[in-house]
Picture (cartoon, helix red, strand yellow):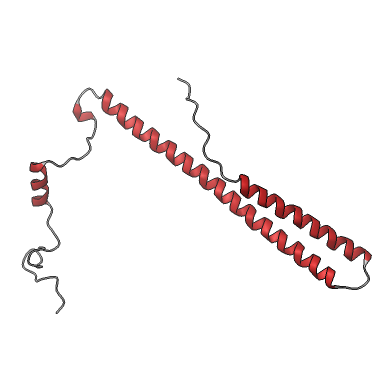
Length: 145
C-alpha cells in the first residue's frame, strides 16, 4: 500500500528569510562602499569608520539571523516528525486493539473503578499518614523537632 499524501509541515521563515536577505544586501553595500573608500582615499576619514562599522554590523546581523532561521527550520522539521510518529503510534495501537483475536494480546489502558481503587490504595504504602503526620511503621512524624 502506498504512503498517503501528508500535508506539508509548517516551515517558518518567510519573514526571517526576508530580513536575512535584507541584512545581506546592506552588508554588500557597506563592504562595497568601504572598498571604494579604501581604494580611492589617501587617509582615513569618518566615512571609512562609518562604512567599516556598517559592514561589520550588518554582516554579524545577517549571520545571527541566518543561524536563527536555520534553527527554526530544523526545530519545525523535528516537531513535524514527532507529530507524525505520535499519530502513527496511536493509529497502530488503535488498529492492534481492533484486530486482536483475544483481549490478552493487547495491553489495556489502566482504569480505576471502585474496587480497583481500593485495592490500589492497599498495595501502595504512603510515605506518611496524612491524618496523623506519622510515617508507616511508627517511625515518627514528618514534623521538624
